[in-house]
Length: 421
Image (cartoon, rainbow, N blue to C red):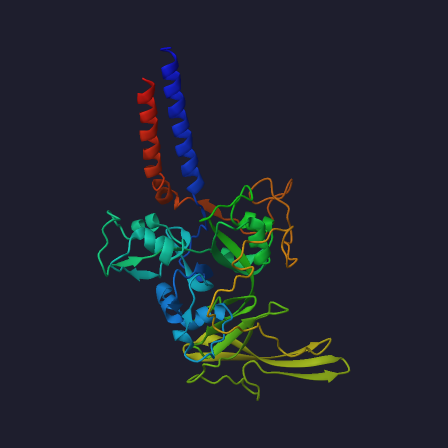
């Protein structure tokens, strides 16, 4: 009988260790990082879910971005009366345009500042207010917080946010990258279908060895986009607009759009234009965005007045003439929506579709699962496919949350051991 007690005790301890390890592993989350070596910034997007009802201006204040830029990125009508004070509903998903910098050798956004309130903790700021885009540990490290339980009311914190750019391309085509926080209902196939990309592309970009994802993971999702070719000395150099949306530039004087039907950037005077420099092309009666066509026996002469960037407070325009096989139709624009007043439980908020069960019939372009991160079976990664790496920045914070449960289990084991003596 005396030999059974050690065996019983050892078995209980082994079960305890396995349980703790399993619990810690289940909550580890990952995010994709992009190494960098220059000091320049680039355009990126954050996928943000509102934690409560907020005005458009309040959302903009959280990220220190232009409220009109948020509306444009989500194709929300900016001509709506008093649109910046419109109240957006809790749990609404928005794309937030941000400047992505190179800090300490990796891409991240460090322009966001947050002023603490009486009820704030690092965890509530990270998980609730910024919807899991950052961890409590990351905020603490960025602000040299030694005791996370003590925050001064009114204290200004830097909130480091994830972003990637990969030179604004994906497989040699223009793209802008969305930092997306995985939800419990998400699948990689569903995310790929929702954002018109492929499982393979997502795996390559995020350096994934399998299709497994967990709630809290942050994925870099490439979105097709229209790229500009403005000169480096223009203040909006590098402007890139996601397909199906808009961007505001030149001090609210110019609005650019991308799609539908093609990935060619189209710019015209904004509805907000008030005190703006001339938008007329030189040696022409055409204004910015205007096009004339003339059918000839040899084809169609097309003359356009295009936007060329914003330099020292002046709007640069350029006149171009080309002979095309056929005359183009009228310019098409992405569909605008009214400022949301409720969260529609459609495919954006319902469980992500799988290739087999998507009721809308949308499937990923590819369901081939690479056997190795960044590659197809038997093939190397695509030559122009961006490949990031992963970090476990939020694992410590969430792992610590399992300790109380482990302590209870330890006490329970001790109780059983005492009963067996």
